[in-house]
Length: 300
Image 1: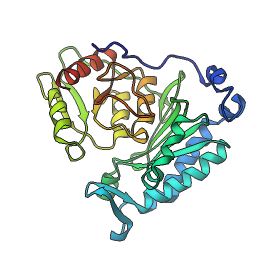
Image 2 (image 1 turned 30 degrees about the horizontal axis):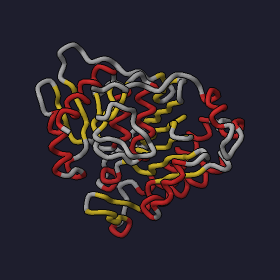
Image 3 (image 1 turned 90 degrees about the vertical axis):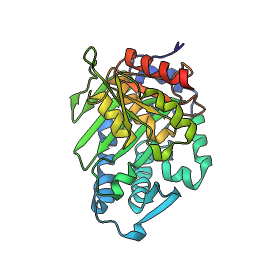
Image 4 (image 1 turned 60 degrees about the horizontal axis):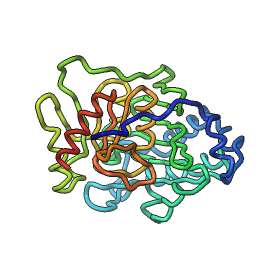
């Protein structure tokens, strides 16, 4: 049933130069970005725009976007502007698909279908947590080209966590190699699922298939941090029913490079450009991912 479940193939960024040869930039320009420089830019955006406002927001610093649970703050907007300037300076000719830019102009998403390299940015993933003074939020940045995520940075500044993944080169957390761990035989699977506040009745019905013997689902917090928790073995999997690229690109690469697996209920890999069969999962190993997808597909 779940035929195409797989992790990304191995190989470093240089192996993609042939695919990039007809793109907007030369292969040398496209893949000469220094990961440490990107990490520094992410840290600086958080230090300048996010952390000074953590637990210091005024009422007029917070705005509802699509409802009472979908919030944006001045920190989200300014951090995205900061990152957009910094990242396009590091890689001239690149584009940025940021959550707040897409909210203002949905055509920004078209960059995911183009030939230019794309930075995918969620300036504050877990804005609701940020607003309530909860440290469980993160800044997510990914570099993608023609649908392939090449590198990602997941930074939780209030928790002191920086996870970096490079396609084919593994993943690290605070400079230490990161690897998923298999669940103990017979252990109950801990799974973070789409939060009930962001799901409709049909999505709730499908996700309820995971409320079964041997599985303990719970509502997710920051999607980026849930992926990090899978990658370091704190939880077993995620199951999400929405596909915004800025929520998932960084974490999916992180889980893959730590040794995990992912897939959609259609049995194919998740596409950052959208149009996915939902829900989908990212899990600590292939066996866990297959089990989750089997339950979700049967309920879909």
